[in-house]
Length: 91
Image (cartoon, rainbow, N blue to C red; front, side, top):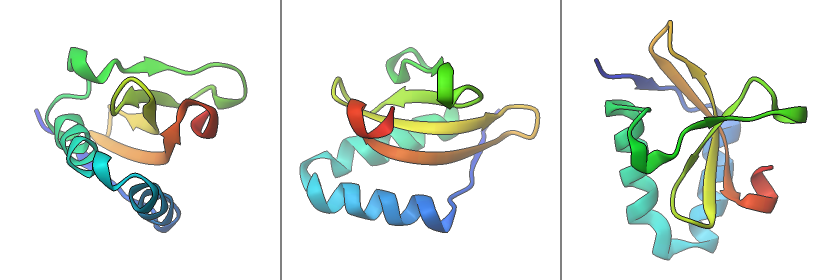
């Protein structure tokens, strides 16, 4: 089963800013998105639910320092990225 990534205009702007600041992460970022589409529960993504003010969202890892927060709508087989950045910026 594959999933569909739904990119909002707001997320696309955030991702563009992130990649402009961190061009060295573009390959890993794109790999993370591809893996999300194929299997959001893949162990290397380290998918986990968030709590507190971000309750209802999930997070996946691009690498040890950078994350993507997302809405994970498994019933609809859709994944909506919300934000991308380092731990402090995303949480």
